[in-house]
Length: 369
Image 1: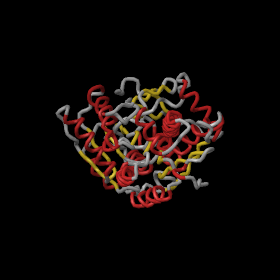
Image 2 (image 1 turned 30 degrees about the vertical axis):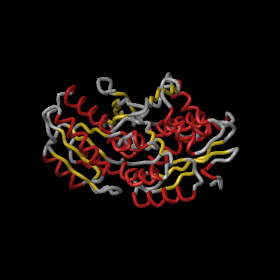
Image 3 (image 1 turned 90 degrees about the vertical axis):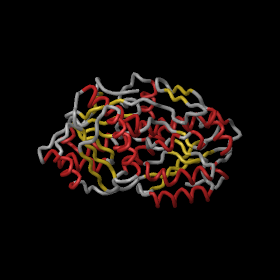
Image 4 (image 1 turned 45 degrees about the vertical axis):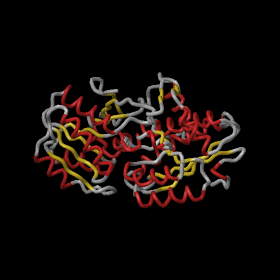
């Protein structure tokens, strides 16, 4: 329910808006971010809210399509019923909507993308949680080439701004090692039309196929590859949605590698992860912990920390100033650090592997920070 309050703030409540994929082939990402943020907000609400205000989240489905995302973000800005935007999903959608949010001086918190253009701290309204895609692609190539000694790498990527960011990162990481891609293939966003790309890549007989895509087309590619007895090492970017990918793949998922930008969601030795698990159980008793919901939770915690710092006299401007003034936040074993030239809280990247039973294990010899 929308509040009629100016900028989404009343004396007893504050509202955020999420515009993200809640349906379609990337739905698990938007839904996971929403659930994680809800867990953080309800945890705060149960403790009395922030400065006496309960926090609400209104989520709107953009289907991972930039045009739809633009229309929704413009309506959020025009209606002026929300303090800020939070938990957007995707590079092409963020590329289309971030300029609208920036022009309106609307907070744009925790987008689920590692795209470099959002790391421009001069934007002033954008605050990222996660490491960049360039950091992820470097971690892949460090593991595959430097540690595993692989000689030939191919790339599958989504044919849009997201995929091209991945292409640039992989190309740069290989160039630093005097290498080039042996093959590349693309597919169209929001489709699973990967067969042509697979045939092109298979012909090159690569040691590994690195993948910059969403879980449904990526799963289709890997399942088709297995059927064709084409079994290189498959490596995915965090955006793929690890839990959704493992479910889509079933028994075809064993040994598929995925880079991660948040801590292991099952490591309750990390206090923040233990808190996340408890908060998740409260809002969704049947939900399993996962990387996307943990990222949503940490995004929610960042938004809450800035609400706290903004004080009782809350406006969009005071909230932006509070976000801009954040430096080091320790959520209990999970630290975010911001500064005048740094609007990205976390920098760590590590690699995980899907196990035979569909779970995850850390790739102990890989990763970068």
